[in-house]
Image (tube, rainbow, N blue to C red; front, side, top):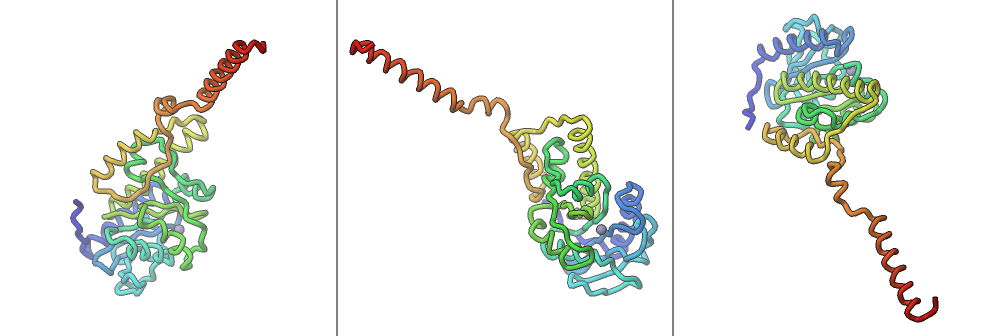
Length: 265
Ligand SMILES: [Zn+2]
């Protein structure tokens, strides 16, 4: 079972800067896009300020807030997008970190309104499950947290329509890795589905085994991707048309026999 432990203020601020560099260097954001937060108490977080590149942050830039959105410490203003972070912490007690970015491949799925859920990669099934697209909401408004609220309990990664992606986890590394895995999965899906034009999907039995692995890792959220039964099982299902054909043949034979007996033929 995962042991709940909050980061100290010092650790949280430093870790946010480290992860900010990775997010920026991995091209998950451009310019000043994206935001990161970390929970340091039941009702308090540290988060990134508005208007700075995530690749060039220092710990003194961070803003401390409570879950009602009140600034408790720091000289800068938080991002208006912190509202969706606050909503995730309010809805999910086990969440201790949230990452928001605009990774280009995954965001393209968000623009197309396509859920990331095709089961092509065991890692994606275990680490991400299925990633739904939350309805479009005007950035910075309360509509954004409202759009993701129904998805928070069952998932730990969502796409924001025409906007970007949001991931969360029990610590900042987990939340960040989910963002990395999400973009990687989106890229593999694009190559297989749209460039090679062939994607062999995992079947329901294979997915069920992966969900068992996920449960053993103590991960209860993520959802289950839609799947098909294995080919063997599909073939074992009785073929309705063949059964009907067999009955028709038997009945026809009986009728002919009866008619022959009666001398009508
Ligand atoms: Zn954004």
